[in-house]
Length: 121
Length: 493
Image (cartoon, rainbow over all chains, first blue to last red; front, side, top):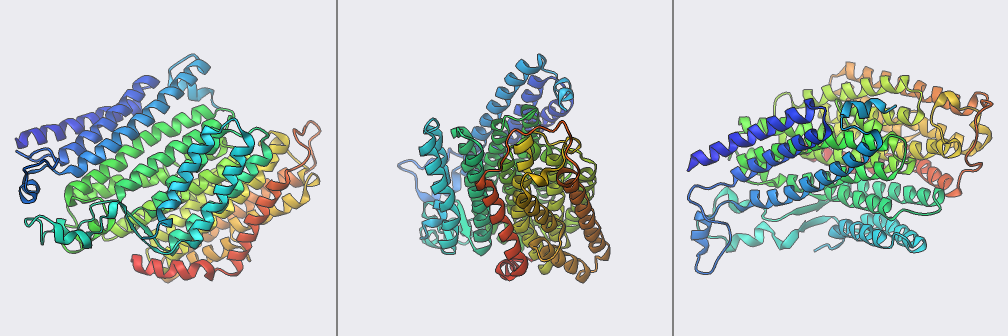
């Protein structure tokens, strides 16, 4: 089961590296934004991996569970709470970026970031 | 329980929502905004020092009800909810930010007949976020409010409707979308190593050797958080975009944006110092970025012909002084850095609003097209000049006191070269500012210079006068704040 955690950590690293490459080196604005989404999701996956517990249960205290059993078997809930907040922030940032992309496409008639910024005085 | 602590965050958020709902009703929006803008600094002054455990999660109270297999473990001592800590240092910074916000809102109302609900929403939301950032004792909570601050900063630039504001907003957002996740990744590394995001818990775990203080995951976490800190503060390599952000907002917006940056820098700077100061080369890394910020920003400001861009670069360069104080790492230098941060909020707000009147009158910020403006309003010209003196560190203003403290601290710590550098940078700031002032106010008025307005609104003059009085008061009576900063800095190291 530990392999799942390791594989997820590698996947999160791959997401972040691919996203960074796209955000820094690709000129197309939409592809850049997709790259940024990759970075955010990679970080979220990394956080989720931290809360993984082999053979653990969902950290919701249900009737019939004892506190000791729950503490010993439940997955760590903090990363999950953090990721939930992080997803909301990521979605907001993405929405603003896409709105700006629309406005700038109408203004410049291109999605090339270098052309857009080249027009900037 | 001190309910005024969470109210410092709740009230601006409520105000933001209400002014947005009443967007079309100017009188209502103005009344609500003024009342809330006055209330924010007042609450900061009257609130008692204390700790707020959200959800009542005081670890001492929870200790008796823990499952038996957790009793006596490291986890048993952890804070299980968000914690806000309100001390006198937070009081000073939230008060100053509140004053700047009030004056910026007042200036905005005097210069715009029809007020924008979304613009005020962004201002109040930003104030709520930076206040929460200052109060929070939880690095993830700090990250959340930092992201909200960054979004409000972008929103303020977009709502300013200036030339090329969308391009700058997008550029800032893209950089932020890289800087923010890197910060979160750093927090993730700490969470993975220690199991908590509460600053006190992290310090407890590291200082009691529950984890290896030099574990690679902690060092990587520090590097990533440092990267996020550079972005939040606008230190190199983000100094160019940060100065562009300031120059694309309305003058009152720039004053607020700069305040936001200073508070973000302080909150993360203090958190980093508390957690990572033991790491070798921590101070060296901070000093390197401080020197880069001072040298690059001041050099770029000296070459600028756009006065808004020039002030923006000067403001970013001044952040280098704050970083320098943290980098030197002695009690006196950290106190000097905190004093410099307090001064920076007030002085740059004065300059953005004061010099912003030139843009209000002429609708241009190109110094090559300006001149003779002292004839329009000599009082404002003098106040702007005095504000520039405060920025450069001329006595008897507050900038002099904080920079003197910083130079003394550098000399005491044996960093003579840093003291010399700080003095040289201050001299360059002085000459850059005086040159711009001479061009805009004193040289003959160009024949083709046209005026969009012939008078500066009284509220703007009032705002600049109040900020100048604060500069003077802190310059003559620095102990008002240093009596708080010096013991705090002692506790930090």
